[in-house]
Image (cartoon, rainbow over all chains, first blue to last red; front, side, top):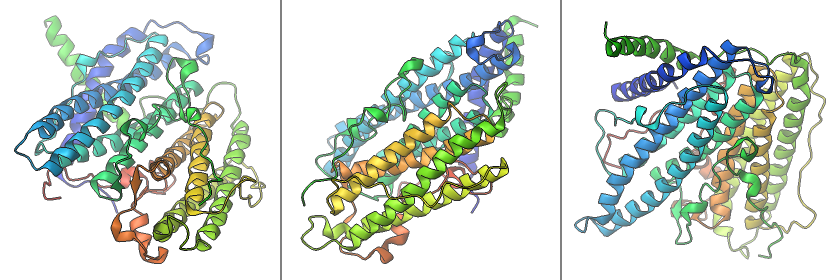
Length: 241
Length: 233
């Protein structure tokens, strides 16, 4: 089954790509023309370093766009949560969704911070957050369910973008960073999909801070990033029934 | 031409070029890192293949435990859906192993890692909750291993494969961890249903075996966007 025939989806993707490209290429490429060779950067030539910085900058822009999308989503969800005329069930769902997207937003902030550091370390000019804004796709109707669907779509797209860019990078540490972020984006996607499609029933024990427990799959702290799933303790497998 | 107009023109050119680059993976050159041999990838690929074969055997053991569960187990009503999801994830690991073996062969390597062995701790106590916890631990370790493999892989194709599989192990982890943490339960419609009847439901958890389409196997890029304009659901 091949995907994506709805014109809104095609337009949204095109806007996404154009936005990323415009924001990053303009700010990175000129700066990288003057890069010097640095053996610590896997002995990349200046051209290759510029290429690598540009690719990472594209993903940094993607992170900023996602952050802006989540910020806009939070406004919609806060309104839904706080509007007394809405059914209580919808307000409760909005509160849950708001708590979740706030957590996911924090993960993306960590991703953006590490990408920015990495681009800067390569000698590139990191794209600014205010250069990468999210425009809701045409036809989008603000509602709790639609916010979650839009977020799921964007997380899926982000994971795909990270995987594709990763393939083109030469520096192992940079591939590692992208893989470590990509796996968290697919976690976000899966959680959102499970909620949207009612694949699970949420219990009162749900702690949104622990749903996607770490901002990276594997720790990127040595590269200036954050903690990974290694920080999660092993679950005991000897519980008595 | 004013500076502003010049910048705008540059932006337009960059937009066209970079859009194409992101879509086709051409923003950077897909070539091996310097001074390293593609043969250097055989060891990490074989390590990942070993882990996959072990995971398959571990799921086999887990399914046996689930089959042996009794109504005295507090999670017995969920036996069917847990088994269906375990079999779904197991099948995805089989696909991962097949792909890894194929990539090893392409490097003129030999698939000599054996059939694998179940990784069950000595203190494991049979029970549905412990099966979920065991699988959560295993998938977490797998997600980390695939990510860490990026530090040692040379060829771009192999790095892509590791990333696309690792992101799926990451999804396995998050699904299992939600259940293990008691944050969610399977929907009521699955209670007391046999696994055979829940295959389609289980397949919606982690819908693709790869994050991106790789070597002909469809990934999340083959999934349809959720219709955000649809407010009826």
